[in-house]
Image (cartoon, rainbow, N blue to C red; front, top):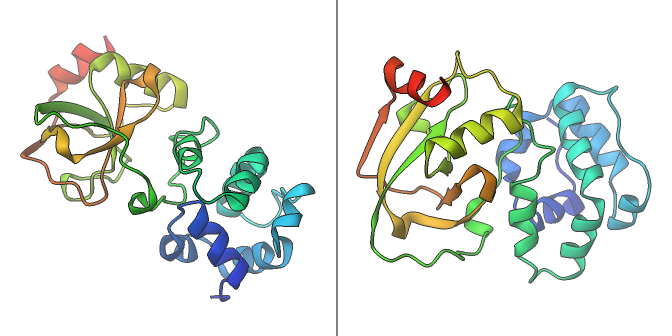
Length: 205
């Protein structure tokens, strides 16, 4: 595995992208291309997108190229944490990819908890299980359907989860059209389960 350059380490740290996961997500050749193509923030003023060096890298480069201005803005002003939420909820991240991960410990908690218990719903990745559930959840079935439609994902092969959780575990609100709440890194829930076939039909009838 090619070592990640100091610039890339700082870049992904500023963008809230999990570098440990990223170095396992990208092949040595993909990492080499990334290191030689993005050497400084000035490179974001040019065209660095490529589809010729591997699918995982293409996903990352497409994301970065579509958010050039956001990347440069938060690089210049590290206090603009609201940009991290914009990146996390970006429409260019498809639900069909097991994309790079964000480190939610770098995000600000902007949700004001009231101590209420919530029931939330999530369409998981194909191989997701209760022990590895992610952080983005919908507060209702309508939000879940909106997410499936916006991401153009097939839900038949995917697990659908519901959890009961205290709202003190909520980090911030995400896409309003998807009724999205983003939970804290390593959130704790009171109860989690897979939805039954009947419950799934109720959502996607």
